[in-house]
Amino acid sequence: GESVGLHLPTLSVQEGDNSIINCAYSNSASDYFIWYKQESGKGPQFIIDIRSNMDKRQGQRVTVLLNKTVKHLSLQIAATQPGDSAVYFCAENGGNQFYFGTGTSLTVIP
Amino acid sequence: DAGVTQSPTHLIKTRGQQVTLRCSPISGHKSVSWYQQVLGQGPQFIFQYYEKEERGRGNFPDRFSARQFPNYSSELNVNALLLGDSALYLCASSDRVNYGYTFGSGTRLTVV
Image 1 (tube, rainbow over the protein chains, first blue to last red):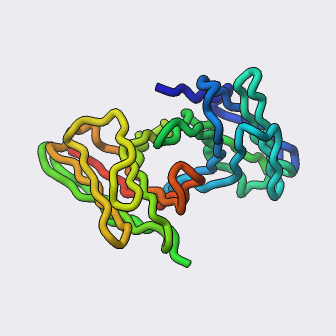
Image 2: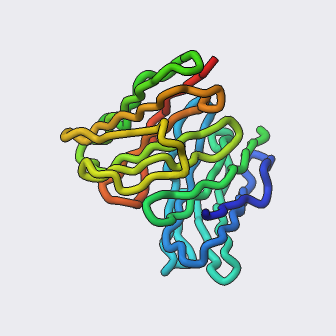
């Protein structure tokens, strides 16, 4: 099966700083990736996606970078806010399913 | 617009019992997927349905089954419940297969 891993299980940042969450994937044939945010008691919330024909994609305060050479994905959150505290998952498309990593817990310190 | 709705939100069952979980996708979404999320882990794929046909099945025992109805809503059934089936069961819908999913808030199943 696919393997999607995250480098750090927890991350603490000061409010206002930028956050970077990393993700490694194993299948070089994967062509579509999604970042999800999951708050306690809720389902995962779509943040941003990127296809393998792109290296970078920007959204509102978020940027996803894709490095296909080393099979690495990152999510950058600008000016992190307390509401950004959550678990973040990267998901890799594989056939008829998405493979999720374990997640990184982001804590924003006021 | 209503998002993906799941019912019930919480459920407690006894080992050996059977459970049915329900999901209503976003209006217009024809693809529904089910995921199991054990505490502290990422979601794991169980089933995908598109236009009422099963398009994919994850590595789960035959005790797990699902179906999609003509209105694109879906049910997940789990028979002969085990303690290890305790988890958050998530339903997700999309207007296309394997595109960005929208997840519901899930059904928290506890097996005692």
